Image 1 (cartoon, rainbow, N blue to C red):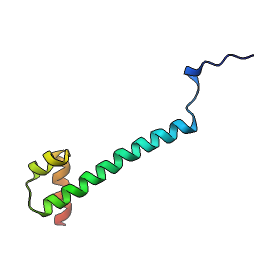
Image 2: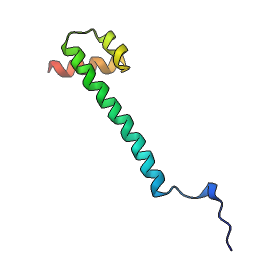
Image 3: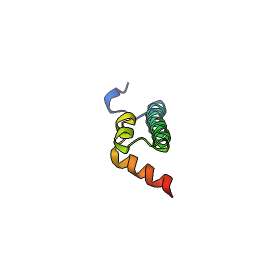
Amino acid sequence: MMYLDRNNLPPTFGHWMRVEREEGKGEGEFQTKKRLALKLLQEQFSEDYVAQLTELSLEEVKKLRESTMN
């Protein structure tokens, strides 16, 4: 009988599904923050305040404001 070292087995399909699900959650949260930031910017909140509320970087908030001006 062959002995398998479970620590050295390749990742399973289930493992990759969990990884993809977690990455999807993170991307969904980021998109939600961006939508909220856009709404706050449209209501004339300052970029600093929007960054603080949404936990987006100030640079990302500035990019969003620029994209709404075009």
